[in-house]
Length: 560
Ligand code: DON
Image (cartoon, rainbow, N blue to C red; front, top):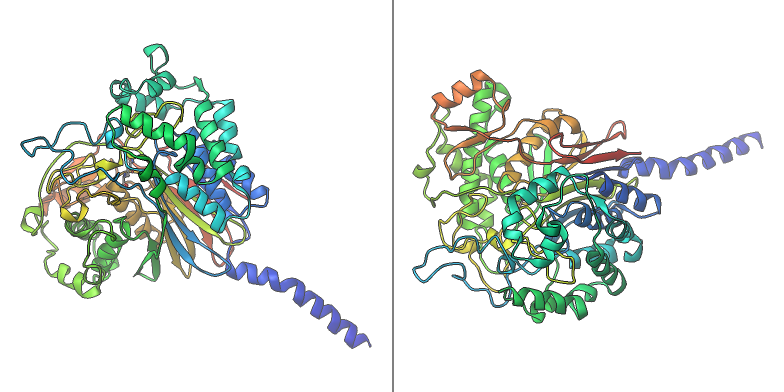
């Protein structure tokens, strides 16, 4: 009798402990959020507390960022959300990238002489692709979330109606864009009231955007891609020289893709496939680096080899990558370890390879910034790495009257002419040329790192530099860095062309700098720090969750 009571107690204890053990094995018991704005982090917290999962939180965070960080992302833009579903172990890349309008054409940004027309890929509605973010939010919520959109969009609607403080980043962005913004009365009315740009500390309310968000909450994708909002978007765009049609909006489709996986030093890098260039570039770089005993080399040689691998990965990006629905990419070759072995034969340990000596494309150009990333992990182990963009500061600086929606200038991510550089100095070729309905190649790389140590969820804005930032952070994680160290790392970058290593002050020791120069690298100190990385990590042994927001930005984290 006594024995059976004990047995009973043991059984009860086992049954009680089982889900806990299963939970610990499956994922986190804590939640972690890192975003580029405190109010977006609060929105994520609010939704997790209301019983939502990481996917609901992702919807709330993305929508909140559209309101509180309008320089960077929004309903007028696109997104890639990398998901990990704990219960099935499934990983999915939700591709809500913008597409070229149906009336777009191969040479639409060239003049009669075939030369690029200045500014047209960046300013005004002709620069805007058909937005994917609203359809993506609906897709995320309906397919993966537990809560209705009315709940997950509520924080964003509240922020838009009650008003948010203008940040330093917004003030700075307006300094860059004020002149272009004057071409959009609806944009100017909001951000340049009385002709004067708003400044940090001012409070802005967004009643039109709140109404558009409410329509999305109420009617799902039809609330944006059909009906009055669609009509306002098309009317506003066309009145200002754009080419959108109602049909373009009605046809927009979110695509679910298989993420790309690369193994390196005991970890798996899970990231975005084309039309992002991130996953392919990571495979290229890490397959190349995997053939060296990096730990046995001096740090200057480690950095030299990383730069040489970046050079080759960005060269391949420029030549081969584009929207998989439109181009056949030699992915089997690019992702193969044999290809990487071939690449290694062209790398010298003591000398930089001038980019011009690699077969490929050449050019030069200016600079641009903005986009946003967040990372979220819920207590069940669901994860989202989301990178969203309207491309450069305030996108095309154009609002279609009545919508409150800032349109992207993502058409600049196409290669408007082979070898002509875009706003991020990236060159491209036919694979990334313009065609109706085509997705423009992206560098946005929401990423998971997975190993015996645990998981890291990461990503950053930064245009072409996104890829090098994430890969340096991944290397650091393989070396044992924690979330805080990953976001604080000093960065360096090479993108094939221009043939120079851009670096943040402190990325190289004086000896490394001298060593790299002696090998023939041209080093260019970045005039400012760059990136705004958000990282959440989970430690498999302890179950501990950490979250860190880039010290270069004004983001915020939570762990509980
Ligand atoms: O998709 C891309 O690669 C770019 N539109 C991202 C732009 C970006 O990250 C700007 N950030 N600073």
